Image (cartoon, rainbow, N blue to C red; front, side):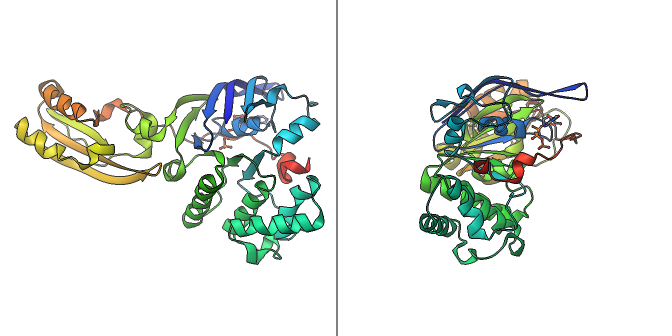
Length: 360
Ligand SMILES: Nc1ncnc2c1ncn2[C@@H]1O[C@H](COP(=O)(O)OP(=O)(O)OP(=O)(O)O)[C@@H](O)[C@H]1O
């Protein structure tokens, strides 16, 4: 549904060059919820803004629903008619909601419908239908200032759905919300994804967001995608940094001549008595250092950190046994942590974002 191929974007200001995108290729399947995660300054916003050409990449292509948007003409700062038309199929929601304070909730949702040329009656009907979809039908006459953050984002979502888009782009849509409100907004996005078959591309710096709703995920660093895939496949990939962050295993790694192993159970392997069988068949004492079950990407996954006496070389047969049982087996040192250190953000507010995209 969304494919970017080798996108590059370099910002130049005051004699300084910043490479925000450095050859980004991404593929989002129809109906998928896809999360792009990375630290501040990694290039996530630039990427998502290139997908609807709010930002024009220096090179590379963006295809949405089979249409190459980068091939559509448009002067540097304004979209041409064909690009504007294509954008009606792409909704976008923002971290700070970008609602017009002078308009009521219904007025905000009606704004893109006005641009689309609907009559007053059609606009009112559609806006109320959308507000009902996001659970805000009874707040139609309220003004944004009278709403909570979560309610404002629901209005933003209703507005983004006005053009019946197939794709929704979410630019840190829950970053300004408390954890409980975040959960309910994410659940709404997941429901819309399922109900409407909406493809959702979201960017976030929060691993919990990816964990809660994403089918697939990509990790971005310094303008590049360094890892990407279906979340359940990543969890089964030894050494995956995303898997390590999505579902860390607790339990201190003791020193000495010991083999510490992180095991991931998914699918059928979750129901098998693998550990007791291992202890019996290999006559080995297994200590459990930590264990947890979680729902990741909508699927139950178990992780466990165990310890066996002796060096890994002497436990080769036991490790092979675990792998044969379909478990993902990692020695903890294999996974490198994701760099979450602070990064300076040198970004001025973009006036384009102060009004919904469809008003331009
Ligand atoms: N309009 C701009 N002019 C100059 N530099 C920019 C501009 N927009 C972004 N950048 C720079 O490009 C790099 C990538 O920024 P971007 O906003 O895409 O990252 P991000 O991962 O979304 O970070 P954050 O989550 O903090 O927004 C950063 O170094 C940023 O300072």
